[in-house]
Length: 138
Image (cartoon, rainbow, N blue to C red; front, side):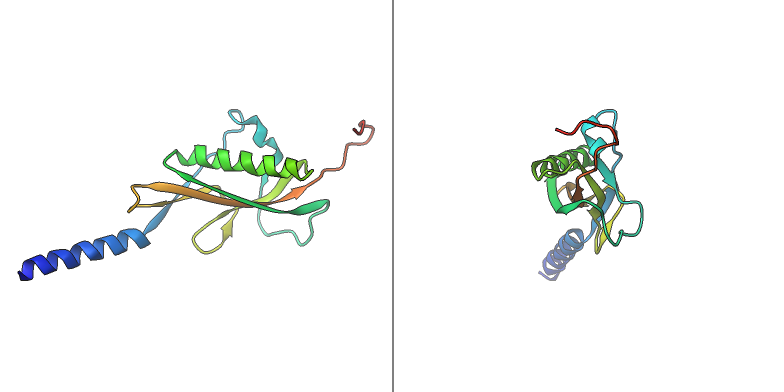
């Protein structure tokens, strides 16, 4: 009987550790395969104090059992589509949700208990780029 309780306690401990022990996978963004991502610019360091032609912050997320590369490409495409819907041309200063803060590297979080189910959360700033000199405006 004591062995059975020890086994239950051990399984419970494993479940708790597995639930809290999530990991990260770094994604690779392949612009050749996803040309629509040319309008998505990742953050390059510290956040700028003021972004010119700022139309506001956007945020979206995705989850699933796809590869991290596919999840990131999908969520970035969705972010660009949202930016275009509000009249922006690009999304800048894109950051991904890390464990405790937003980071500039494209990462997916995964959870061992959910059989490596991955999730990605991303935010960026929608901007309207000024037309080039001499360019026709619509």
